[in-house]
Length: 528
View 1 (cartoon, rainbow, N blue to C red):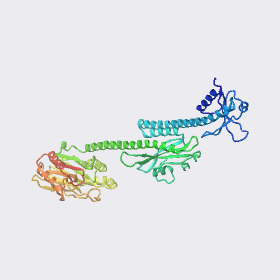
View 2 (cartoon, rainbow, N blue to C red; view 1 turned 135 degrees about the horizontal axis):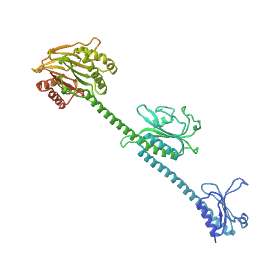
View 3 (cartoon, one colour; view 1 turned 180 degrees about the vertical axis):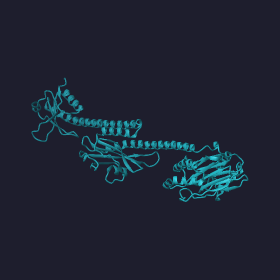
View 4 (cartoon, rainbow, N blue to C red; view 1 turned 90 degrees about the vertical axis):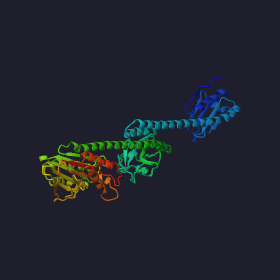
């Protein structure tokens, strides 16, 4: 028997279609399957009917209406025509449960197919996000791409991604999709913001949304909101929350589910790792840039200092060794009129970059004032006036020695603003301390500065100037023994050229184990 032509009038799973067709062909039947209606007189919703089916024929030989009750869905009515009464009973007894089981199997297959399709989209989304994070260098750009894909796959009207800054304790809007949202930033302690609460508590929230005062689109009122923390878990240590990802509203007007929360949490975990990696990279780049800048500052500072060994006015040697890459120690040598020589050494309090700025200002101003006046006291007075505001603002001070050697007169005239380590080393090995005439700059008042003069023997005497860093490096347990070791070293080498004396001093400090935290080290030795 050939298979009767069939007319499909509703949505019925293909397996049920094939089952009905098989029964038609096997038993020479005509069938009709429709939805049972509870209201009398209501038109039946026909799902399946054989070509040539006749309702009159169905009722001619006895019972031909069978109730089919699938597990899910409405009750159905199956009508059988084209068979005698005895066969109808048998066929009905077999066909009804077969239809029910076939519909259940079709429903489960459809469910798993839908579930697999959804999971495929989710897996594909997670893979796409991994590719995005790996291929886009700028995190802000990657965040916008990711958020757009998430909104598309999850059917969200709008999305936002917030990143926390530890420096200002604010959540900053890094990416947004859709209109009508807040621009930020948000305080992490804001008690009224869901985003802030999710960040603080580190837990996800699904809720119906109430607009904040900064949002303008009233159409979003009542939309479903899904907010999850962006967390980073290091290889060792506790996880931490670094931001928040929000989805607002469904395009199908539905609500976000626990499955949506699980997917967005997985996405947020990927983003959290990328945020932390980006932070570490930026910190590394910042440190590298600062290191390069400090190296450049060190080179520039060293170039500001004169090459003492090439100074034409005297036999001289000097060395500055900052405790950090830049420091506050410096020296100057000036060739003055009538074969006189100006020698200056300064030590700015503290060390590092602020001290280096004061040092640079002092050297610039000293080069002007030393050539305008032959009196050391006048030079220090002018320098104090020029540096007063900067020293007060930075709460720093400056010890400064400035002396002028006049070989023709056999005199050394000097002014000393609180610098403790200034000596004339006599040919016999005796040391004459050039004591301070005034307090350090930054403390001295408007009546400072005074000056003194001592005898100077050309070719015999040495002028020795050094800073605390040198003597402190050599200090033991007895007060002043660091300075004593410096003086003993110079005395032993006093007949050597100044360059060898400086080398001996720094070799001494290189072999020492300092008990005091390091400071800038500077030494200057001059012989005329």
